Length: 250
Image 1 (cartoon, rainbow, N blue to C red):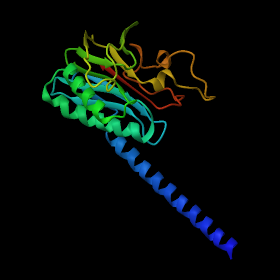
Image 2 (image 1 turned 90 degrees about the vertical axis):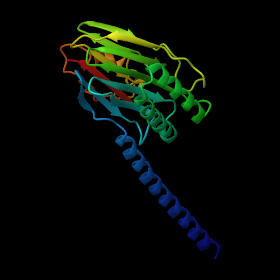
Image 3 (image 1 turned 45 degrees about the vertical axis):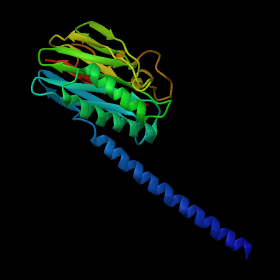
Image 4 (image 1 turned 30 degrees about the vertical axis):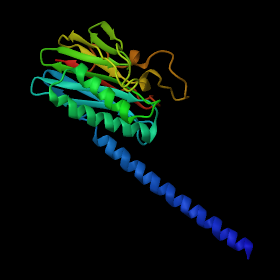
């Protein structure tokens, strides 16, 4: 009597485990669909700019953040960021950051003020070891660009054969609940390109799982005046959660 009872108990345990796994899979897929709905149009024209981005998550959900927000007929905001960690926790904080910036940007605050408030809010919501890197900028029809790079990968400003590297000038969001952020300003000429990317690009691997010997953006077709405008995501060998965005002044 003991052995059959044990079998039935084990069988029930296995059945419950399978049911839980299927339910979790369904919930993760739903979360993935919700996260994808937060993304802007992958290719669009804003003012005199043509903008495109590529987004690829290594799992169901991730802490990668990208957004494009019109600011009237003459300008738009662009954002690219990465929440520390992976999976569900990072994706929840990413959604929190998305909502915070979407709420703050229409208030006519400066870029520096928006990032300062967003960082304070993020710090209050995140666990002690969590933070977010972020590039938040505003571009207008005349080519004027102002951006804050808070601990993120350098922004590349490509003008013909010249590439200006705009490195981070501030700490990531959430490192401290009271942090000052500095913006930089540039005038972007026609046919020039702003290129933003995540560490999923610089740390991408080949088919054998080996990290590339040099930053992947050096071989990205979109970086170059003669390349297709904002041709992001043409390289199929990225095997890590990654996102990249480019904006070309027409």
